[in-house]
Image (cartoon, rainbow, N blue to C red):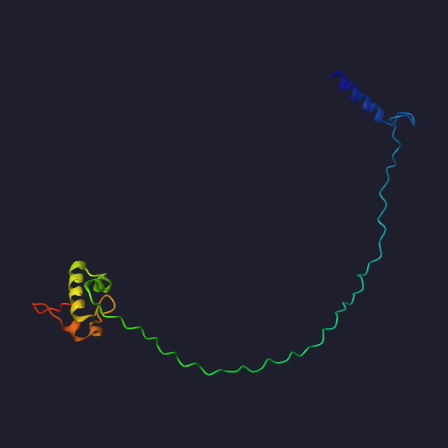
Amino acid sequence: MAPLLFFAFFLLIASTNGAAPGAPGAFPPVNVSSPTPPVPMPPTTPYPPTQVITPPPPPQVKLPSPPPAVKLPPRPPSPPVPTPPVSPPKTTADCILPCSVRCKLHSRKNVCLRACTTCCLRCKCVPPGQYGNREKCGKCYANMTTRGGRLKCP
């Protein structure tokens, strides 16, 4: 602690003007006077406005007008493509595929398949789709009934 006090004391003494001029640690005397007033500056004018030179627009080039649209007469609708006639089934094996399509959604599939196969063999036709269209196979399929008087063919 003593060296620190000694150092602080030394700095205090060295910083006073009691030291000889030119000696190390001596500071030149400071003239304390009032600060000089600021020199008034003449008012500055803003820069003169610069003219923005825009290049002249390019000359208008007139494009050739497109040729008038030629309206073609609408094409007549094409006739529906006829489906080739299906050869009538000749055996029970020929009736199984169309009857399985016909009875696909039936609640009693086996009963439907048996009745459909019988009607297919007798009338040589199975209507398209899974329900209805009986008239496509003619009166044989549409009017065939069971012994109880109900329609036989699904």
